[in-house]
Image (cartoon, rainbow, N blue to C red; front, side, top):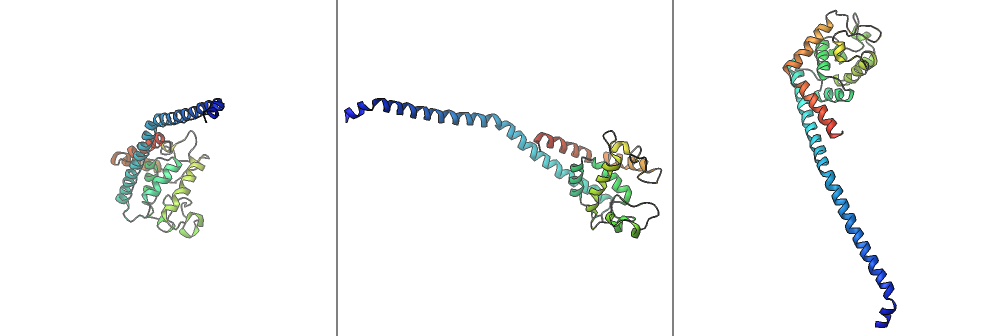
Amino acid sequence: MWNSIKKHKGFLIKLFVACVCIFATIIFANHYLEQKKLANYPYEIIKHEAELTYSEFKCELVKEVKHYIDSIAPSSSLNAIAVVEKCEQYDLDIKFVLAQGHIESSFGTTGMAKKTNSVWNVGAYDNMTVETINGKHKYKHPDYSIEPYMQLLYKEYITNTKTELDLMAKFVTKGGSRYASNPNYEHLLLAQYKYIDKHTKIAYLQNEMRRYKIISGS
């Protein structure tokens, strides 16, 4: 047996060295992966905390928007969560959206909006009746009128150089047509916007929600 071992001594040494190398490689790889994991750990914590904080601010914002809508029109069926979600999707100032929804129809509870469910009266003009309004501007629920209104803003009113704030000074299309015939429309809109800004936490909550969304990388 000793002779057999001596005969294969070179092979056994090579086998031993190979095993040692493999074992060392495994240990090194595990150590490297563990260090890499630890290096990323603080970032993952920050990201997770930012996601949680973003969600908290969003929940608070929904509550604040609901409170405002209820204070103006308790019978309105417009859902605060739908308003917040769409404003986030279209990157619109919630105060502006609420101010216009308020003066247009008290959130779907006054005027033709009671029958069309078009909170912002998109497609409704002076001297029109509910019957003469295009069917695409009549909705089963006020929530369905949110996105068409926002799409209209971007299609006809908001540009790279014209924001919601600019519209409160001169609410006209790219071609110069007014949103409303009332000459005091902008004044009414701006006054309501300022009221919301002063008496609610909507601006603060929306800004914080946006900030933590950026931090979380969502």
